[in-house]
Length: 68
Image (cartoon, rainbow, N blue to C red; front, side):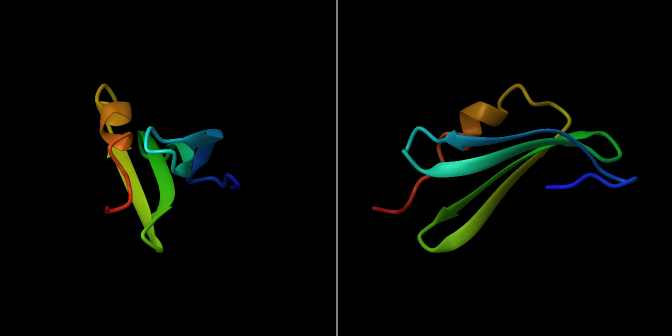
């Protein structure tokens, strides 16, 4: 992912969610700091975005999993 004048990428990491699902976690700054987690669940792209208070973000992100 690339930065431009409006968006600055702070970090981009490949992660594994607790469900075993691979995901990309992007920490960026655009009119404030934000975090994205992008993954594919049940053949659909899922994007979890957080603005502001990140204290519960990881707790919420690990709940993403495919339906059973």
